[in-house]
Length: 118
Image (tube, rainbow, N blue to C red):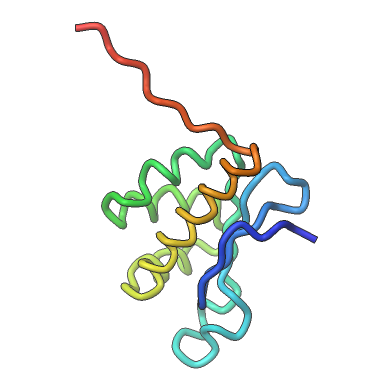
């Protein structure tokens, strides 16, 4: 079973089965009435690329959506999810919760960017 990293009413983030990535997915049954086409949205982000997700989580939704598109099987569903304000705001929160959990359990290390010499 995969380790839960963050969860909302609609989204959940968990450590992938092989523990080298994060699985973002919509919770089963959460969107059955509102958005049935998004019921089985699953995005597998390798831990090595999680920094791109974190870097863009608070920026323009198109940037985050673009990053997530490269890791999703059903790309059209990502666009629909990021375009919906309710789904997008919860996705941001779940991503941030997952990041904190990854740091706390030692699976992710955050560092300051190197200063450029002017």
